[in-house]
Length: 343
Image 1 (cartoon, helix red, strand yellow):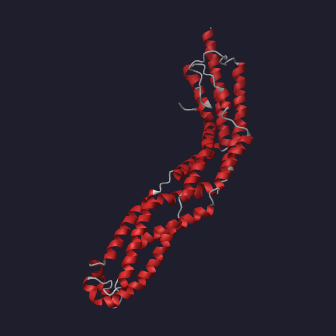
Image 2 (cartoon, helix red, strand yellow):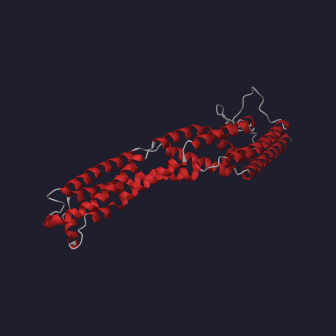
Image 3 (cartoon, helix red, strand yellow):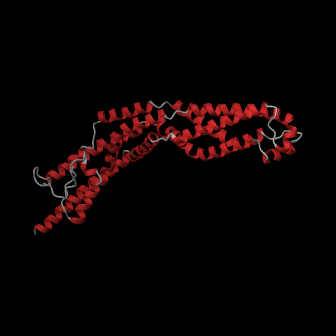
């Protein structure tokens, strides 16, 4: 009877749709669209990090640097004063201890100034602006690549529904076609990405990275450097413990600033993470690694969708225009490529 014919045609439809879905999956592998899709994910993550780059860690570091400068300048003044730098049991040796400390202190102040300049040279604004520009362009690229990449799976789902429920879902090939773009449209989009990419000079990233290292290394070494600057030189070096037991107020302050800096360096290292991923993912990125797979897959997928169209027409499974389309038609109105939006 007609029931078995319906079953047969539903089985045929399942096989036909599934075969086209499998061909699309093969096209996706052959065109390396998966690696293009993964690159898009990496760029997405990167532009989010750049756009949301917080200025707070930077401001915190600047505050620490200010306090540090105050303490260092106070130490320089004190090392020249009559009372001198020595405290407690060391006070007797002050005339001999202060000049030795002063020499090392001067050198340390120079090193500090280098770190201070390095911090001042780090500008976050270019990176935030870059993130915002990338956001605009990825707003076009990401959904486009994601829709293409999801095409084989969506069609596979439709086929599975046919097989499970024996229903007649009609693949909405019209909305599938909206996820395709012409080669010249694709070229245009990726030219925009290249232009955006060129607005972040590689040497800016490299210079920022060097400055970051100058700052973080200065603070990481600070603990041992402070000890060294204020250590008691020969022949009274056995007195060093006294100096650290009854330290000069500057030693106490600098150690306190150092501890603060060590806590802050953790959040400040977000900047380094961003710089490194910019270098790895974006600066040397050959945009063709995304655009070529996209073009190749598009040209293959257009043919598949066309043959799906022909099969649907030949088998008379088309929603008649103007008819109420029932739920089994996999389409959501109001989306640019409805059959791929996960609801």
